[in-house]
Image (tube, rainbow, N blue to C red; front, side, top):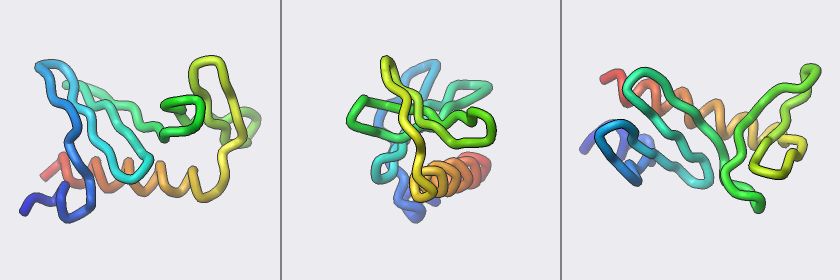
Length: 87
């Protein structure tokens, strides 16, 4: 069993240029040199940004404050995915 599976991470899509991974409501798009992690919200995929030190989830046409739980879920998912992909 792969480390991705052990960490509860699924590869959802794979193409020549990008792979998409998910766990619970977190989603990451990983290209050949970089990636982006977000979280699914009622507004669609939202990315974590910081505005004046405050975490905010931004999606197309929407911006909402991020909860501490959402920030932690994104951080944990990103860390676990990086660990699994570096193996």
